[in-house]
View 1 (cartoon, each protein chain N blue to C red):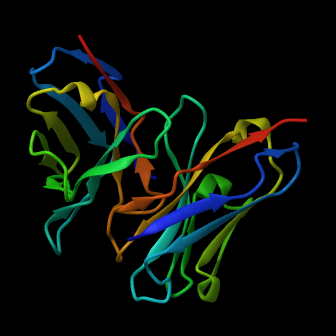
View 2: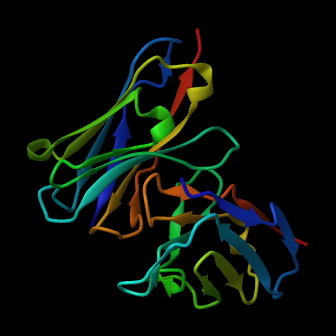
Length: 113
Length: 120
């Protein structure tokens, strides 16, 4: 099974500042035949289901603000929020969908300083 | 518009079998590549992938729970059913139903989730 490890577990950032969350997979999740990294990022607010932000490691889902960006390849991935807004307070999860069981990171709780 | 809704008991006793139903609309589980899955989240904890069923009835399970899980579909009713046997208090969680559009796609849609508590 592929293990996804996020860092940090929690993060406190001032409004307007950059937030960076890292995710490392225990195995390569880059499919060589299509050159796609099978990593997604989700945002979960209290009492709500997760919401897809980023897929293929760097593609923003429809309607996601452009302050959210994803990067990385192979085993190391990053979610960046370029200018933190109050509504970005949430728990963020990375997930690999390269092979079943599709696994999630343990989550990163993002708060405002 | 794609929607999914989970239904089932909110309280089950230890050793009982849990049966959850996902009723969806806006897509067909007879369309090539489509899949519906289940993910759970214990209170205050991380997401845990459980199972997946594809349009062609291909099924995938979390290995550690494979002996306890069964996923089935009823295409005519637009429903997917997950059963989990021998429930234990550690299985207390919110159970989510999910949808992916095609093979190898990420989860694009989630249900609102249903909280299942396991307690005597």
